Image (cartoon, rainbow, N blue to C red; front, side, top):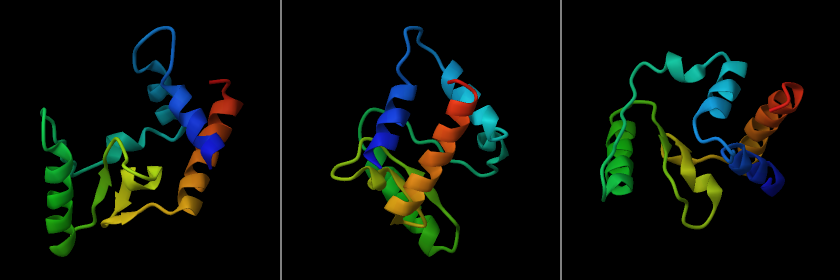
Length: 109
């Protein structure tokens, strides 16, 4: 798993700053971010994680399906990705990262 995480972390490193690489990778998966219908972005200086987690809890308890990404993680990287308040499993994280790496290798990213 850590090999995959290192690959993903390094994907953002580039001599030229910008979103080119991540936009390219998203295009390999038919731009899933463009299909999100109800998305809440929380920004600001302090308290984003607490607000995001609280809102996710409220929405999940109310019957909504929720996804939450927060950064940085405290102990394990799995904490960053949650579906309905449950951390992504090692297995699912590995499956997703393997798919991303395969697409990047195939397209020389």
